[in-house]
Amino acid sequence: MNTQEERKTFTERTSKKQWMAVVAILVLGFAAGALILRTDPAKPQAAGHSEAGGHADGEHHEEGKAEGKDHDHGHEEAKGHGDKEHHGEEAAKEKVASAEATAGSKAPESKATESAAHKEDEETIPFTDEQVKAAGMAIESAGPARIKTSLQLPGEIKFNEDRTAHVVPRVAGVVDSVSANLGQEVKRGQVLAVLSSPGLSEQRSALQSAQRRLELARTTYEREKKLWEEKISPQQDYLQAQQAMQEAQIAVANANQKLLALGATPGSAALGRYELRAPFDGMVVEKHISLGESVGEAVNVFTISDLSTVWAEISVAANNLNLVRIGEPVTIRSSAFDQTASGTVSYVGSLIGAQTRTATARVTLTNPQRVWRPGLFVNVELVSSEADAPVTVAAEAVQTVEEKPTVFLKVPGGFMPQHVQTGRSDGKRIEIVGGLKPGAAYAASGSFVIKSQQGKSSATHTH
Image (cartoon, rainbow, N blue to C red; front, side, top):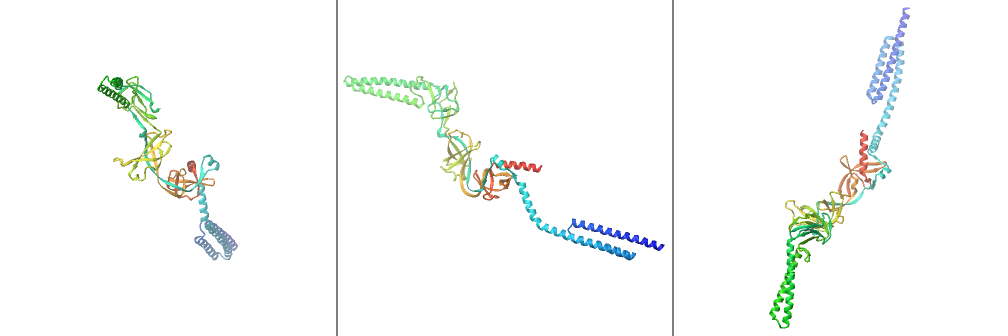
């Protein structure tokens, strides 16, 4: 009875140990599989698995010695089961290694392509053809052009002094009337103002007296001539009468010349009336006279200027004098509004200012619309050199993005910003020395709309 119970107890204990060994092997197998998936299938895992297998074999071997043949039989079964799982794990590791090797060989190329495509998609600013047309954009191709290097010089519009007059009364008097107003266009000979002058009255009185004496001298001369011819009077009386008449003629001519020199008409009904008249066609640009005012004979009361032509005076530094020559074509640009004009250099000063160290040059401009007003500051541009540039774009196509000059290239579905290196410019075309190939399509006009859209897209993406 005791022997049977001992056998039964031994059998139950042996079966229980076998099951525990199987469970331990399964747990080790699952752990090895997890390590294969997480780490590179290399020697550490294989060593771990072998160690685990060796540990299991050693455990079963010791138990077999202690417990007997049945235990040995169970251990062999468990070991066989563990070997099968071990072979399956090795096959799985080989498949994973092969797949990773294949993926590793293709990864760099695919990642680079995907990165470039992703970057291009991010930088592309979407624009449809309808939006491009609605915005008035012009698409052009980068190409060669002749770039003119220009010299910019400061200047100022001034009166054409050859066609500017300062009207002054040549006699003192009191203003009776003023008919010309400031800014008024006047014609040559038109009365600007009327003065009452005592000095002029005396001049006209002297003229009238001389005229009366001349009439008397002429009458006396004619009588003495007739008497001398009739042998009634001596020749001496005739000659004296002739001399008196000639002196009276000289006095009348002298009185007339004085009045003409004063700008007064000799035959005026009012002896003291003095009329100020315009010397030529022009505009009243200054007025310093009013009704009832007493004015002197050297006071500038009106300034008349013919504004159909004006001067653009240029300050030329000493190192640029060799580029500014008489007859050189120039372009005048206003610094206050969008206006340009063309002209030629008509004068270059021979002296350099002691303080400014510059010389004065002059350009005569036609001014039919009176847009060039004296006192206006201008920029005078003249060509200093010309050269051919292989790659150029329109000046308005270059925008500043990220503090770099940028051109927006036309790509399918929109535009892509391209940083460029700029060179010479003539205001219309800009030379591109780097970052752009000849023939590349770009947004020539309306590029500021694309820049604005890029800013909106960047803000939305950041948000």
